[in-house]
Length: 150
Image (tube, rainbow, N blue to C red; front, side, top):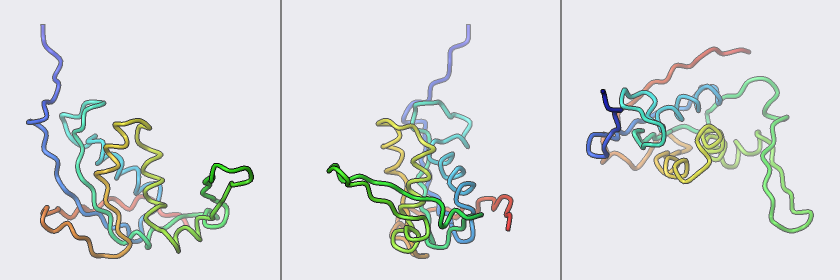
């Protein structure tokens, strides 16, 4: 009888990748980032085991969206008080806090539990082309741009 393979923490390597978001489609880009965080690109992937890599996203302000999402998509938050619902459009959110747009999209694709929160700590997002993680010697990874519709 063959035993089921279960990766031990000492067997798993966590690589660092730098990904450029300039000109990438938001949804297609974040699905690939979520796959890297989960470790689905590795042969030893096991659900619920942290086999994923660290991902550094640069140029977050240059992410692209298609259609009328810039004006039709809203992000909501609530202060906890009656009438405290606040909303901000995708266009305004991209101008003020572009890293929150990507963080929200990736979070929606990860498990919503302590495992997902652990994975989100491995995601680093920067609005410009520079990042402070040179000591980790990250590899530059070019993600497929996917299909662009105008």
